Image (cartoon, rainbow, N blue to C red; front, side):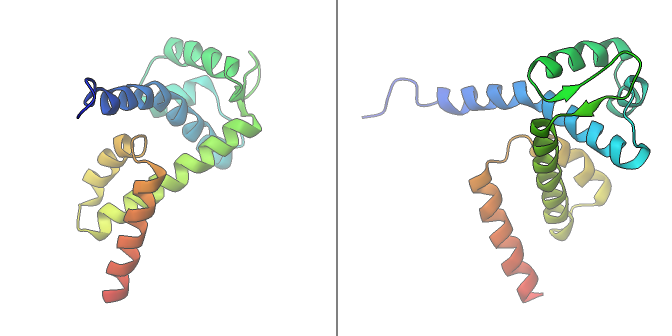
Length: 141
């Protein structure tokens, strides 16, 4: 017999993923900025995210409380070890999904948009299955 709330589990998981998406996006962008410019500033993050500097400042404060980054008023934003690990993980997932979609024939401009949402919702299990599928596909090509 089915449990009363069988449908609730996927919705609960999706809401939890949505809550963490912003953190993943911010640490990914901060990491990218640090790699290219050796610094990540509020104005650069705002430009990359398409949000106001006030939104960035508020979000950075929340992420700092979560232990993902350090921000000083007068200096660049830096990632903690936890933030760096999260950025690395999301970047790998992002690059894999982009490769997967473009290999399947999705145009790059569409894949870039789709990946921004998909990277936050694909479980490690699903990603491993997709990776195996891609490898088999590429072997046949």
